[in-house]
Amino acid sequence: MNIAIITGASAGMGRHFALQLDARGDLDEIWLIARRKERMEELASELTHARARIFALDLCVPSSFDEVSRALEQEAPNVAWLINNAGFGKIGRFEAIPPQSNLQMLDLNIRALTDLTQRALPFCSAGSRIIQVASSAGFLPITNFSVYAASKAYVVNFSNALAREVRPRGIGVTAVCPGPVQTEFFDVAATEGGAKSGPPGVMASPEKVVARALKDAERRRLLSVYGVSIKAFTFFSRFIPRPLALWATEKIYG
Ligand SMILES: NC(=O)c1ccc[n+]([C@@H]2O[C@H](COP(=O)([O-])OP(=O)(O)OC[C@H]3O[C@@H](n4cnc5c(N)ncnc54)[C@H](OP(=O)(O)O)[C@@H]3O)[C@@H](O)[C@H]2O)c1
Image (cartoon, rainbow, N blue to C red; front, top):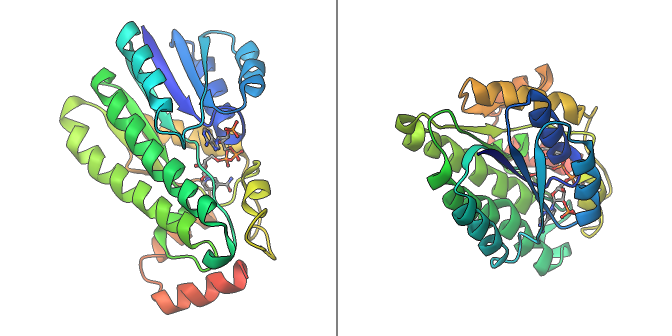
């Protein structure tokens, strides 16, 4: 049985990953993971090829992963796609964001992604693809978005190194690094840290970012970056002096 596992499937890019993978018609099941069950039930009814299996789980709770592990051990599927997409960020000064939220960003963006990758890898085979949704925020430190940006730097570096380790097994690992995307992300981001501004510039469509990510993952690219401006940012971020990055991002996320 060929399956895809998608976290953060109840909204935004996760939803589009499910729809676009389903449209390919070569998966038996798509395992949808997020907290909001009703949203995933709605999504399940829109799938036309694969069966949906819903896991209504809070991935900040470590025991949530046992349910997924049990299902993997029972079904012994081939995990053709693992899409670690669930994540959130809070904009604001580090001290203004409640400690619980700062720590939950680490739990979801880093811990959950790492845990699920380790549990799913034994069920991957040659041709399997792992997509780790990082962010262009992972390329530089970001003033007033500090924990989120640092958590995504982990995702980029972990994914790239893992890609090298699993390459001999024919498995690809791609870090997806979008700029601002039109989803619920910034509604969640602006709620607790006294953020005065939202995202900079125009927002990409989630459908297009996801389509690019799936293509790049098939080609076993290390990074997937959608759009000319974010590609340019990705390239030039290597040369931007840190004090300049910290000053500029303070202006953006002031
Ligand atoms: N939108 C952007 O501008 C942007 C840019 C770069 C990178 N990203 C990254 O893209 C990924 C997807 O975000 P999005 O833009 O699609 O945002 P979104 O619309 O807010 O979706 C986030 C998803 O994560 C799930 N989630 C949140 N907390 C969870 C938890 N504790 N346990 C399980 N699932 C949880 C949410 O589902 P429930 O609430 O139902 O649990 C939802 O399905 C994230 O990793 C984000 O960091 C986004």
